[in-house]
Image (cartoon, rainbow, N blue to C red; front, side):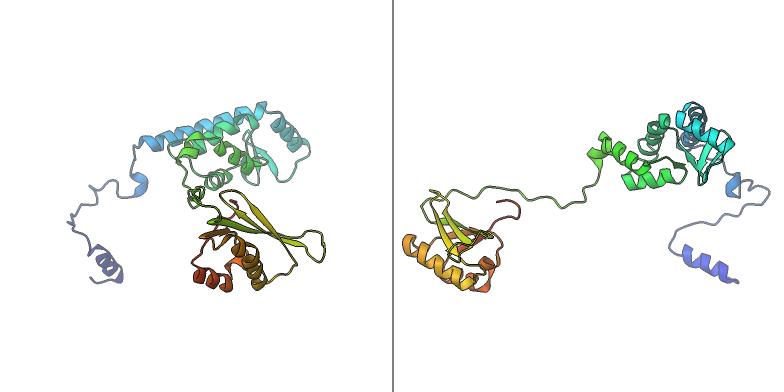
Length: 269
């Protein structure tokens, strides 16, 4: 290989099993891409659709009231950046679409087999390269939202939600309890918060008044005094993600007492 160009060709072709055939120039009549004729029905369909769209666009431009107004103003007092040319109205080199054929145009750019029900951003980007009308993105978004095929086949971008199930019913009173705080109450005797403890089986509740801010140690002392002292040690406790319940002190207390702490799902009481 004498030239660097031929050496690059050789490097690219080393991974293929091929056979080189020499054709005389006078016999190789379609050597360039422009001379090759592709008789592809999909490409022909796309070409026919484009021609039909432009014809409909010109007819709709003549009948649409808004387009008529733009046409009259562009003749007497041109409005930048609108321009009338060849029976069409242009806005910054993009064709302004009359209202009567917007659905038909969007059907070609979203529902046809050539585009395959693309998402909103892709459909809008494809449309915006050639066409324009006010609030076009919102129009495309509403159209695709109502497209049954797209809604059934679109790719989910959100993580699958978990299976929400109720907690099992306890077998004995005060084996399973729930803890929560009620805060921000009007102060009474220097108390403005309430520790709420509820038995999950018989719904019996204890309400312990607290002063905010309260420490984990104070909560533990009231828990022993009002719950454990009266009802014994529970087997499990359900609470939210309050720092008073997930602190290291509580974790060690639960571990030493063989109590299982269950944190409920966020936004699912």
